[in-house]
Image 1: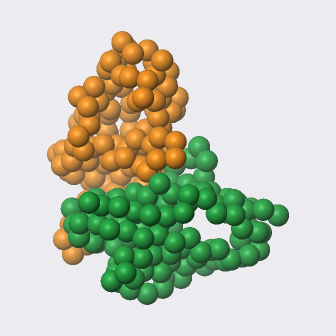
Image 2: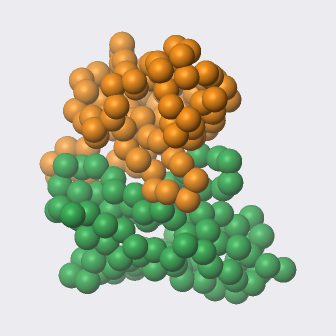
Length: 109
Length: 117
C-alpha cells in the first residue's frame, strides 16, 4: 500500500532552524512535493524534488533520498509567519499526489 | 479574478438538501481536482479531470457528483449528504502531468467549508 509518515506536531523558536522529516512508500515515484498550509487557508507550493539531493530556495531547503524513501524540509531563520502545517506529498506512478496528514509547526518567540 | 476561486466559501446544509460547489481556474491549466480535507487527516483526493475527462474517482460515494463542463470550471454536486461529510472541500488545478514531465504543481482554491446538519 501507499503510506506517508511525518510527525504530527513540532515546536521551534523564532530565529532557529527546524527539520521536518517525511518517509514514504508509494507505487512508483515521480517526485515529491512539499506544501505549506496556514490554518483555514489553502495549501501553497513550497518545493519539488525528483532527484536525490538538496534543493535550496531562500530560507527553505528540501532534501530527497529515493533509495531510503525519505525527504526532509529544512526551515532556517524561523519567523512567526512560518507557523503552519507542512504537507509532504510524493507523486506515484499514476501522477497522483499521495498526501501525508501534515506536520503542524508551532513557532514560539 | 486570478488563480483558483471557489464558491461558496461556507455552506451549511441539511441531509436532504441538494447543493453545488463551484470552482473556477484562471491559470490556463488542463487538469482539475476535488479534495476533501477533514481535521487532522490527510488530503483525500476525490476526483480528477484531465482535459475535461474524468480520470480518477477514488471510491467516492455517489452522493457526490462531479461535473466539468470545460477546462476552467469544475462543479461538485451534493445530495443527501451525511454529517460525516462535513469538511473543507478544496479544488485545485495544474497542467496535466505526463510521462517525462511529472513536475506540475497544483494550485489550490481557498476551499468551501461544508457543514452537514
